[in-house]
Image (cartoon, rainbow, N blue to C red):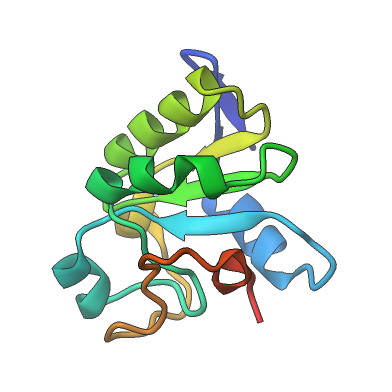
Length: 126
């Protein structure tokens, strides 16, 4: 069950799975870890924008969309979610526990890395 910590919604694994399985969901899930972490294991279909680079994409994000941020333990993604909230995004969530809590399928390699020039369609799950 989601909880709010320091004003940021935190979702658990069950809620993230529900979002991933809902083909009608327009929620965007973004992994904010470093490329070497993403290469080792990531949630299939979830794009990577490292925490240190996400700021350079901020103007391209749709403030009317819903976002979930994922990292290793939930701390970096929490910081990204807080930053997005402070930048005027209302529907942002942190995946509490991060990849350490993820017990679903994983993929490896550089499946879906977001780079400039930014193409927002690359954020969509297929």
